[in-house]
Image (cartoon, rainbow, N blue to C red; front, side):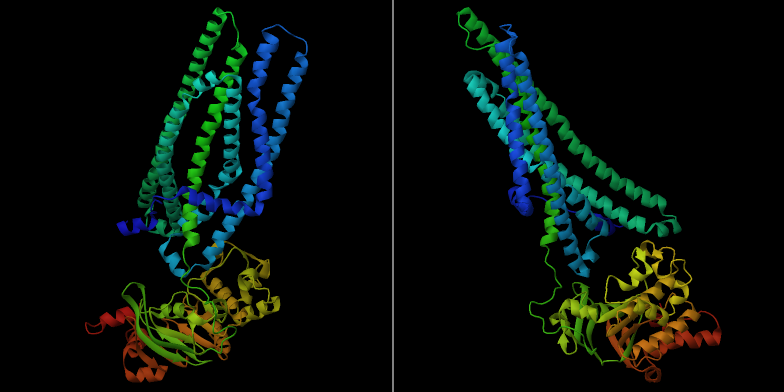
Length: 621
């Protein structure tokens, strides 16, 4: 695989981003559900405040009951302790339900927004980005935001509340011991800051490698038949191993930072507890020697618990930061897509809407998919309403590009394309495309019934019209033989149907939509001769009231067209009827001779002379 092909699956790291700007934008998705989020926040705060009283219960149990050996009222104390955590359980339960509801609703909104944007993106976007990477945006990247909204944002606020509540309780009990307990906090923040910087880079690599892996899998699974046909399994396996290895290494690198950070946090916590025990024990012994008892054993035990409780939310904040980093990396990629300008859109004030009459005009059109690599060069022609025009020429001469530009899948760099005298860029885009129906050589069918594939969600197309369109192209002959008829299920990409049957369904789909302009792009190339003759009869009837563009290599499908346009290397070289072009004895005559005369005379594949092989071999391909 070439380096250029490999780069097609690559995805750049997101580099430096401003986290708080991304977080602020993410938080905007909470606005529709702010009332649920507020209730969840209140419950989180209440639950964490209740949790902060656990150590006070321990201190009271030791100093008021255990040390003085006081058993009276102990059962009431135990019941109060139980009630405290019962309420905490109820608060946490309701909070979890609310947060998960919010998280799922937000993910639904973001996924819908991403899909809507993808639906509006111009075709050129899909030429540059592999499908697997795009799927990663709407699946894995959106999923990465789930934990942020379900256990990230609200829990961070809850953790901050419990940290301040614990610190307040500690200073209330003993300010000296509280200061000792907080000595290790700077160490913890230093460790957290180191982990933040390293983990950010790791998350970026993991997301990048994941998108790369998905892009590769989508392409090679879709092309599994070709891989097997050419015995390329080993090469594909080696490439997969390479990409999979990169993904594994990126995950291992991220885990490495975790493996250092968590034990380090535990070690720092142990240092804090050791300082509490040392200072607290020393203070108790010193006060006992002096005959006074200010600091009690219960307070020291409470501080040990407070220290553990204090480190837990700080550690949780580190976890939440990891969640935040994963969400920022994922959301940044999502926002790049959402912020990507759509090059082809309906103008703010379209000059033309509704149904067209069908007049097409190309005026000095230049177009290139890549800069200055011109596919069309100064093309000009006019097609009148109801006229049938064939486009012929060798592969890569620009025939299909003409139809793509006409339907405004791409915009021209120079010149203009007019439909009914109005530049297609000034048409309402939806109305513009509703005037067309296209039958392609490579038919795409969706999972669903045959009826749904013909109707394509347009409820204005009745079942009677579906049956009429199918009968016109003789698709009903095989559909009626199926057990479910028009309700028969079509598998992914039409699996289970022959190529010819799929093309017949595509013909029925085009006729059912009753287009003003019909485009046939090698539409009969995969149909046997007998079926082709039947389709030709239906196509001729349909063309009578429609502007039609026919792209074909087989001249039998275009000889009855009103005009034929001959393209060569992006230029319009000849135009005229079948007989006129034969009389000119130019490019079309050579193509006709190549396909018919030589075969009739020699009954063998055509031979190419040095003078004509360069043209004829291309034109006939």
